[in-house]
Image (tube, rainbow, N blue to C red):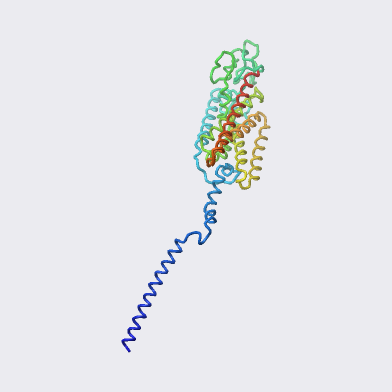
Length: 373
């Protein structure tokens, strides 16, 4: 009996040990199966792929929408380093410092006080000689003939500013200057024929005063930096320079010819024009698109209201906005290539048409400027 009981007890122990081993093996298998279980047993594969790809697709879908990068739209990650925007801001500060130093040499003061420059900056003659847009220095006009002598702009007599036309008194002949002397910069190629068309571009780097520089610099940091982070430095620089030149060409055709204009506000309006097209192209994939449009419109409207102030060129603002809209179709980046050849051809055709329209309009305006006296 004792042997039989001992045998039964041994069998029970072996069964118990074998049961524990099987249980352990099954536990491991269940664990491995749970870890290696195909997704379709937990969530349908299609649904899981949608959940995994939806954040990427959502970000890719809105990748080129610039409104998400600036203050008038939602923000997200940035890709490109804004080299052009910061470099241009440094150039603006350096050149404005040069304006003040030149004004110091000609008048003895860094800032023009008599008459007072409301923007806290140099005198008009300093602006002209450093490259402001001044039509009499760009082409012959009847309002300021090249053959006459003019009072040098920094000349005063008995604490009274002299009129622009030089008086006939021989005693004051030494205080008069030729138009070429007043304009400064490069000499005229033909004697007595002003031809400094480079003044379409030079005003982009000049400002009338500290207030003007601060306003343009602030907008440059708010919009240009974020825009450049989205579309890269090359596209941003082309948009800035081309829209700025177009705006000043339009302004030179229609604005007051004897008024001095300078500043990069036309380029900043080109940014706004680009943002309108960016919003239009990504309208369906943009959240709160109506809100973005209203904000963009209010910013544009407020900037045009500033154009009603004296000596502010609204024509250059309008030209910058229009050229920004046109150039947007040429410069706007595309996240992915079109799936077929036909769509790729359409994309490049639109880009080519945009560039041609800009070139044709710019050529027409320059031609009109040169032939109309």
